[in-house]
Structure formats: structure tokens, C-alpha cells
Length: 441
Image (cartoon, rainbow, N blue to C red; front, side, top):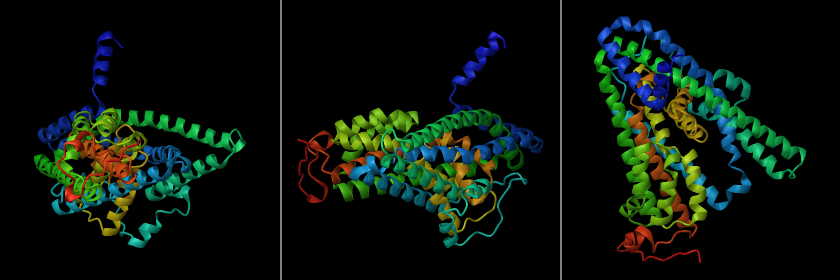
């Protein structure tokens, strides 16, 4: 490779992958609109991207969930840890329900039609009871082979938690202790390998998204843009409801008993940083600083809750998965039943525990959810182009949730000082309840 080619390649690689995919989305759309139906000949290049996504779904879920369970040791949780984990799961479940509700009202995706060879599971939807029973697989290997993602997720979590229990009960240095450590080390290696594989898949995704969008717009024309705008609007409305109702009204006003405005003042730096850099982990230093200096939370709470939240609390992304599922179902002309929407909720909830650190996490999680309810993965290309914008909103939602849950758990455990930070100049507690300073002295 010549020096000029190397420079161009390095410059190309220096652009974040999500922006390259967005550029491919725009270029593919333009090509499809200009060229028209002949652009459908690019479909095989897009189909290859879909097959690559299918290839990585099961191994990435298994490895990352077992690694996530490694950090959920019963010995390390304690009262604060249990409260934090429970609240993260609860708020994520509510977020998905809000996303499903809003998307059912707005119906994003109506008016787009996928390529005729898109695979759609047309089997009759299972009853609600069968969906719930399907969480527990009769044969984990069969569940992996058949892409029964709820079963795969459940078994991976249970296996990982079982490993942590054995590790905690084993004598240090014993064969059991060494064996569990060896398994976790092997899984960690497998996780890193899958990160590299996913990186390669996402690199090819630039070509795949270009091809899929060219084929799509070659068939549908410019009208598909309206449905994508409705997708963006659905997420924006759902996030606004989640932040204002769940975080501000219920958690801050109802449970903590403090002004939501004061809370927003205390967390605004973290929220704006998350909106700017689109990374909960990258925002973590700012989030911890806001919790400590602005919100008066004790370090014993935020030092656990915020790093954990940056990893597993994905309210915004989980909400987005519900909206994307309705969007895709509308695109392929499939109506998701209540049981299937519950399946989306459970799959997104459980998958969110382990896949936050995966490159292109939202697209991988979307693949998991779509596989569970029989939706075509080719629809992922349609949302990949607008993902940089949506990712900013989701990340801000996630960070806001981390701070809200941290503040609530600190209040429950007398680990917050309401005489400092943004609370100090508040006129009075909401509801007329006088402040009762709590310190760690």
C-alpha cells in the first residue's frame, strides 16, 4: 500500500464508525433516490451485513452477560447494591414500556416497505404464558441454535451468577476457586475476541448500510424520510416523558422530596456532557463530580452506583429498542401482539445488563430483540443512519437516570447531605417538609 493510500486509510479510520455509517446511510439513500429500482442490485452486499450480525448475536450475548454476572457477586452487593440494581432494572422496564406505548400511538415506519426478500417470521404469535415460560430454556444449546434469545439470556445470567456463588463459597487458592477464575478468564478473553469481531462487522457495516439504503430508497423513493422522522420524534417524546415523569416527578419530587429544578441544576454538567460526547462511561468523571459536589451524595453510594450505571443502566437504549421493534414491525406489515411486545420488553431488559460496552451496542442489542420476535435484521440499516442523533438523547437519558437513582438510594441510606451543593440555597423542601441535614460524621 502506497504512502498516500495509508494516509487516506488512517484518516478514514480516524472518523468514528457511527459517523461513517451515517455517511453511508445518506449516500446510499441519495443513490437509491437518483438511480431508482436498479439500485436493488446492491441488496446482496446488504444481506451479507445482516448475516454477519446474526453470526455474532449469540456469542456476544453469552460472553458479555457472564462477564456482567462476574460483578454481581452476592458478597459485594449488600443493601445499597441490591437497591441500586433493583432500581436500575425497574426504571429500564418502565422506559421500555413508555417507548412501546409512544410508538404504538405514533406508528413510526408506516409507509416504508422492505425489500420483498426480507425474512419475516409469519408464525402465529405465542400466547402470553408461553412467552413467560420461554424465558427458561429446556435445552440451552437448542435455544442458542434456534436463536431463542430470552432463553439464551436467562441461561447466561444464571450460569454467570452460579459461577460467582461457587467462587464466593470456595476456599481461596482451592481447585474450585482456581477453576472459576480460569472460566472467567476464558470468558473475558472470549469477550475481547468478540469485541474485535464486532468491530470488523461494524467496519463492513459501512458498505452494508450503503447497499441496504440504496436498495430501500430505490424502491420507496423519498417518502421513507417521513417515517424516519417519526421514529426520531417517537424517541424524543418518550425520553421527555421518562425524564420528566419518572426521574423528576416520581423519584425527585415524590420519593426524595426535593425540587426537580434543583436536581437538574445539580446534574446539568453531566447531562450536557453526555449529550455532547454520547458516552456514559466517558461522562463518568463529570457524573461523579456532580453527585459529590452538587448533590451532596456520599462516596460509598456513588462510587458503586455510577460506574455500575454507566455499564448496565441503559434506559434510553432499552426504550429505543421497543420503538425500533414497532417501527420495523410496521415496515414489514406485521402487528406485534401484546405477548410479542412483552417479549420485546423482557429481552431488552435482560440484554441491557451485559451489552453496554460492545462497539455498536445499540445495533447489537437491536439484533437480539429482532431475533427474539422474528423481525428482519435488514431494518437495522434504516435506523443506523439516524443513530448518532438518537444516541445523544439516549445517553443523556441514561446519565440522568444514574444520578436520579443514586440520589434516591443515598436518601434511603442517610448518605446525602441536603445542606450542601444545589440543595443549600433551596428555599424549602417540596411539600413543606423541613430539611433534616444528614452527614457522615
